[in-house]
Structure formats: C-alpha cells, structure tokens
Length: 382
Image (cartoon, rainbow, N blue to C red; front, side, top):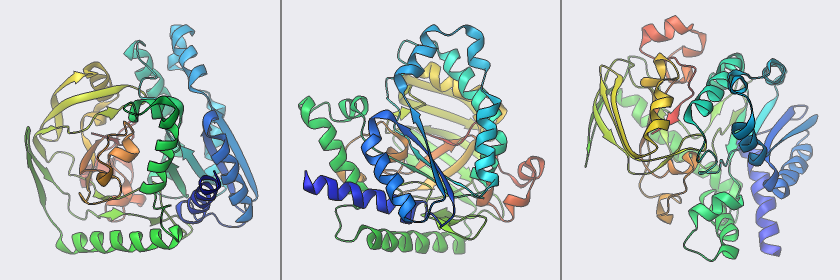
C-alpha cells in the first residue's frame, strides 16, 4: 500500500507539472468520475502546491447519466444547458486550465437507443462550439488522463479474479505513464524530446501522401500543403508548454479533406462515447466515407457519421511506434485515449487548426479552403 500511495502521488505530480504545467495564479477545472476521488484529491493538492488560485471539481457519475437515457423524455436529448457551456467559456477566457479524467464505461449505453446518444452528443458539441475553439487552437492548457473504475477494469482484465482487476489496472496506468521509472518527470521530458525529434524529421520531409497497406486495408491519404506534424506537447496561447494526452506516443497531422481514398480496417475495438464498435471498416472516396461495416456496433458508427457533413471526413492521421509501454502490454484497453497510442490511427471529424501553417488565425471557410476538415464532431479515432 505504501508503494501504491507513493506512485499515486508521483502520478498526480506528473499530471500537474508536466501534463498541464499549471502556472501560479491559474484557475483549474477538473472533471472527475466519483470513483477516482482518491486521485482527484491528490491532483487538487498538487495544483494548490503549484500555486493554483482556485480548483473546481465537477464530479461525474455514469449511473445518473444512464438513468437520464433510460427515463428522460425524448426532448431531453436535444438539450444542453447554456449556462454550462458559458461556464467553460469563462474558464478559457480567464486563461484557466482543464483536466479531464476520461474513462467511459465501454458498456454504458448497452440497450440504449442510438439516436438518444447521438442527439445528446451533438447538442453538447453545438453548445460548446465556442469553448472547443480554445481547445482545438491550444489557446489554453488542457489534459486528458486515465484512472481505474470498476466497470472499466472488469472489461479490460476480465481474465483475472475480480478482486485483482482494479489493482492490475492501476499497475498498467502507472507503467504506460512511466510512473515505474525512478524519476517520472525526467523520464517524460526525455520522452517528449524523442517525439519532438520525430515530428521535426517528418516536417522536414514534407511528405505529400501516406499509403497504408495491411490485411483489409489499402488506403491513400494526401496531406495538404503547409501541414504540420505535432506530437508530445505544445505551447498554449501564453507560451506555456503542456501535454494534452497522458499517455501519448503519437505524432500526428491533418489529412487533405478531399484526398483520402480506399479502405481501412480496424485492428482494435472503438469505445465511441460508451458504445463499443468492433471489427469495422471504412471506405473513402474523395475524402468522404461512402461505406462502413462493423460486426458489433455498426449503428453507433453510422450515427457518428451522420452528426454533420464533416463527420464523414478525416481530421487527423497519426503515426505510433510499435515498441512502447502501451503496445508492449499487448492488451486492449477499450479506451481510445490509450488504444490509439498502441498503433497508428486515423480520426474522423474536425481537424486541429494547429496542424496547418497559420491555422489558428483562419476562419472555418479558410480552413476548408486550405484542405482542413471542419465539423461539430471532435476528432474520433478509428
């Protein structure tokens, strides 16, 4: 137990110091599941130690979320409170930071009508469009991290006795975040230097096209003129370096919106906002998905594609090394934030303006003209 407590402290310190790189005087908002309260309290402690002006914790409970989708009237799912969206905008306007412990139950929406989840997802995306600009342009520091919940651990470590699963999940999270190293902060800074070197090499090459070949996959992906490879960390609008995803092993850029052709077949399942999609394929013509198939959850995948016009186009293409702490565990985590960092991947939906020269200064129309995809749908990895 002493070792676990020490690792938990090291994890919280890493997230605040390296992930968010929280600065003195900042306001921090943490979105946290009820089950991760032990970690969340340590994060709050570390935030105040770093000089945070105020820390707000928004507790989330998937049980009450499930009740809404089971019992709320049909017009509930097109509604998202304006005051909640405005709260997020005020956080960003004041140069606050956002930390999200994102661990959706892979079976959360089992048995729920797909249109309800799609409608609620789109309502939230539309209402939070202004806030998302701060995120997508990296104007503020934000970070997504992981912590075990019972439902998630039961899914990932179903091969273990139930009483061992949460502990096994914690061990995995510590390993993939390099907490098992003697100096995790130093280990992360070394890791970020490696990713920086990789993206600089790719930016120097100025590749025009990527071609993917694998069983069930033959896909050509054009890259727009002026594309930028990113990965590891980035600077926010105030010049503070932060890491948006922990763990992260990828370097990524944007595809040319109309330049994707062929078929790609998944090698891992996709947890699509608590809805599992497995063994699926997507076929593209002139950038747009014209056919999709899935052995499990095809209706969920189709509902994502119907979010808006841009949801059927790619917004991101990422390269990931095979040799990494995540890949070496040889386990599927049913969590996109982890599984995407075990293999090369693509993402449907809106591109990050930071992935093209001067992109953060461009309007939607200008981004489209430069070959970037625009959508209410955030980048969903596939």
